[in-house]
Image 1 (cartoon, rainbow, N blue to C red):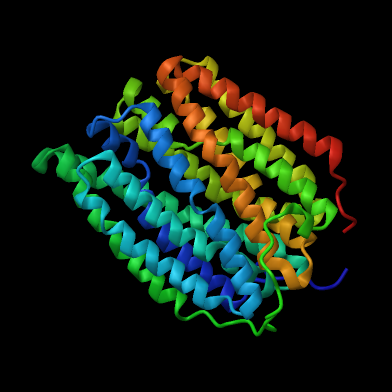
Image 2 (cartoon, helix red, strand yellow):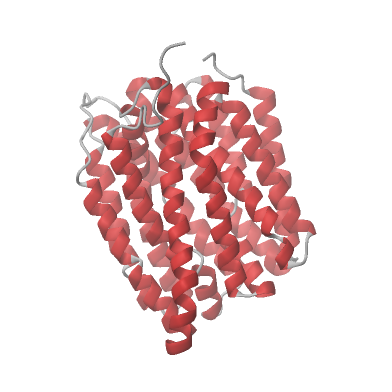
Length: 396
């Protein structure tokens, strides 16, 4: 049987530093995220406007993810793109405290996500290349867990500070003060990334950028299509946050979001390790099923105080899907095109998200919020069925 391995097995220096950077970044981002729909509503925005802001923010980076992944493979470098992405996001977040219309929020949000688009494929490739092949899923799961731990700290700070600031300075100024506070951990994350060591790679100067699925192996092509369809269902969480705030109050909305992140953080590493043992496909399918359950709950239940279990279901879905999908892409990608493959995956997911939140926002505005959740459940069920029907799990 051999000696039991320590829980840190496979978690190298680079993995730990990148995880800490993600933790700090998510402390910053998750101070902003639960307040953002409330801030937009205070500026006069509807569900549709919230959907437009998030759809453009998430999907504008799609092309950037392809380009950054390609350039990373072409130059054989990872760290410069990761550092540039973290730095640019920090700069763009600094505009949010001064926004006076939803268009200003849109510009700041898109700029923040541009930084994410620049850093994500090279960072994911760096994670895959900084650990052993048998612990790739664990590394991605640990990274997601640290990322989401930061997403717990952010809402906790909001719950602790927002009532105090709102009582003394008013809701609008409290939003702006907390947006300023969010810049501190974002800047620290950039400094941590500077300590990451580059993994030596061979430049591929002749490599051409490819945006066609034909550049990928057949099995990876099939999975990218499935992931894109699922992303069409997975609209922004700002809409359920805004829905709970509208029907149950701001504190309940932030608390529900906090509980979502607690579930996500507790399960992310375990989900990644589970996928290393039993395969990626069953873990991803469990995540898809949890998302369908959460969406159906929001479609059926009207009492905002009874929606907590469905935020839990969303937390399970994110924990089982986010890191495991990336690990599966890393498994299926050719070694010399890993960042390009991850960039193509991120691009497909981003393009799927372009209409997702706009569609959900339009349904919530012109029909009812339940319609948005019902359509999301139907599309996610289609993605799961396609995955089962077309994709065979690779031998492990």
